[in-house]
Image: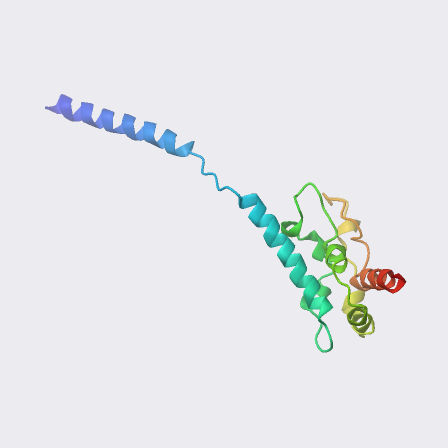
Length: 147
């Protein structure tokens, strides 16, 4: 009787161990997940751009005061391709009047520069990280003025 109990316990643990190995190596694939994330990132960039395109007066969109906005790697296309998110947003802005109103805003927070690029341990070379939001808005405004 004891032998049967011991055999049953050994058998039980062997089977549960085998099942655990199968479950541990089981891969769940979600088709289209990468494309969904890219679409979400593009929509988020467009939302930021729309908030600038529709700006008329009053409080500025809060993201304009984040001088290190470009370091939000979750909005990059991938981690191996750092981009200036601020410039990516501004390239989608085509309302010169809104940009001019933002430039005329007397808020020093628009002039702050991110210190990320100054750090020696910076992992990524992010384009235009050394410029303030006001400088980038001025650059985009000048581009639109030339058209």
